Length: 200
Image 1 (cartoon, rainbow, N blue to C red):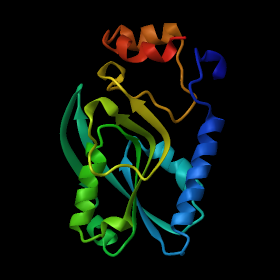
Image 2: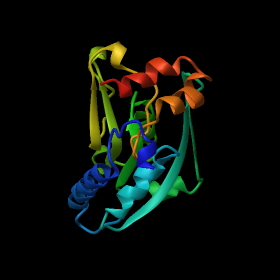
Image 3: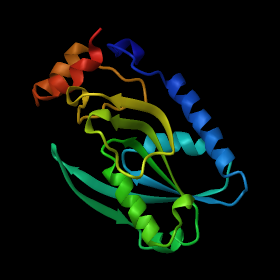
């Protein structure tokens, strides 16, 4: 597999080490043995979630929510879906929200609002993400931000702020031929968004 890659941006070993560190941080946070309710925001976080829960030596319960926030190339209206039993599952629990990336922050902030409306104190809600993007050029951030993350990305200018997040959960890279055949011929706009990853 690696021989087919143009460039390895982050190795699986590096990801494994950082997720293990994050697991230890969370284990210290929830060291009292009281089960924590992990709410995963599907479907983007599934690989990160699987890696993370294997590194959590603590009792936990899993729930899943689905959020459709991005329609096509535009950032659409947030639309959440979850099991009817989620409302009861949340009551009286400490909650850990898990997502793959904190980009605009709208998804996580909206979900935290929903959890708080169910009577959970803010101190009992924590957020863990793989990638945490900070847009410095905006000069402001939403009130809820990740408590735990694997990687932080500082975006200083709008020119550095690409909407597309190229998956960081495995060995990442495509040959020039693959990028041309599978991406740019279908959407030329992707060239500007992806090519910066391959510049030396």
